[in-house]
Structures are given as C-alpha cells and as structure tokens.
Image (cartoon, rainbow, N blue to C red):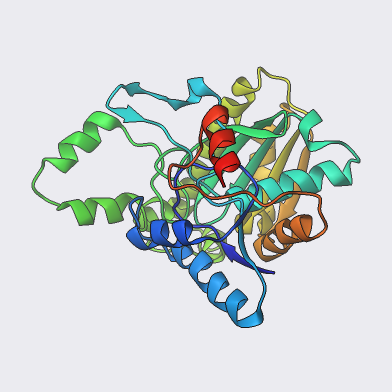
Length: 301
C-alpha cells in the first residue's frame, strides 16, 4: 500500500481511508482551501497505481470527533469546526497508551502539538472531543492564535490592509514572526542568551498562552486528566519545557514525545488495514454521514 497525507476534506471520522475518485475530485476543487497536504492523496494514488497496490490517507487534518457543545462559537453565523495536527496527535495518544499498557479509549488525555502551529486537544473515550483550531489558541512561530475580536474588526476596516494581507498576518506572519521577525526557536533562544529582553518577553508570553489553553482543556475533561502529552518540534526545547512545566505540572503527569513521527503514523495506519485490525473507510464528499444514511449507502454499494 501507499500512504499519503490527508488534505482539507470535509469533516471525517478518524481512521484510514482508501483513496477514491470522489476524494481526488474533492481535493481538486479545494472548497475548504488550498494547502500542500491536498496533494498527498493525489501523489499516493499515482505511486500506488504504478505499483499495482492501493492508496490510502490516514487521520486527515479534518477529523471530527468533537462533542456538540464545542461547535458553538458565540455567533450563529459562525460554527467552530475542527482542523489541526490530527495525524501526529492521534499517533502520539496511541503511543502513550501502548507505552502504559492501557487502552487509549480508557484514558483522559491532553495532547499538545507544538510545531509551526500549536494544537491543544482533549481526549476521552478514544476520541478527540475538542481542540483549538489554527485560527484559535496560543500564538506560535507564525500564527497569531486568539485575537481581540473588536480590535480585529477595526483593523479589517481600517483601509490599511486588503484581505490577503490580513489573512497572511494571522496565518503565516503572525506570532513569533510578527514580534521578532523569525520563526526559528533556536535563533530566539540564542537572542535571549545574548540579553534580548524583547525576545525573552515574547517567548514567555507564548508559553503563558500555551499553558492557558492546556488549562482550558483540563476544564473540558472536568479536571480528571490522566496525563499531559507534549509533542511536536518545539518539544525539543528544554527551556520551553521547563517553563511550561511550572504552569501545568499540577494538572497531571507530563510525558514528552519530541518531534513529529507522521511518516510512521501514516505507515501504521496502512499496516492496521493490511493486518486486518481495521477496515478501510470509504470517503463520501458529504463527510460524516448519520448512521442510517451511512448504512444505506454502504448497503447500496
């Protein structure tokens, strides 16, 4: 089998999906946005056909396991919908469960992915029931995270920026980059070591924001948290981990899996199908279907 990265598809259940024509067409239309990950299934299918095997995607970025109350934004015109670093987050959650010889479904976890974007997620009953999206949460290397809404509205109508510029400001040129002109955490730590007080203040503010979001997810889990699991590229920073621990270690024991093992996660998803542990899911353009309709569709097929 060949595995590709899942792109900006409709909300889907967690799992391994066989690439089909409907999925390729959905990614070609890019109705949910353009992103490099949209090419993952397309490339996987090309390689798979050449090799005479099947193509798959695993835990795409639009996996939706949220509880219903998480979808309310505060305005009926806007509904929160999940998108994030699902592939690495779910792989790390399963890895933690294996390492503890526990069933993932029996654990209540907060998994924090700290990479170019930061995703803080709450897990219960084997499902990721809430998380911050790329438009929310802490600011990171180049994303702004939560912003004061009325101030953002003023900025939008100030006439200083067009829509593309504003979008880039909050997603691609926000966060550390906006304040310090770099996304490189090693460079920022070097500047701190040289006495750069601004770099120090921004670095500490980012950690403060991450800790606040972790506290919010502890509330989602009603204060009953078995473990905090930290992962992603920034989890290599001992300075960041040390300062973050001071804010959150009272919540639950902390385990760190630094870096991102997403290629292994893709392979593991396909091995689960090949070994018969999991049935590959069928992609439908409508995304998640209600059980009755899904049964009808599968029956017809």
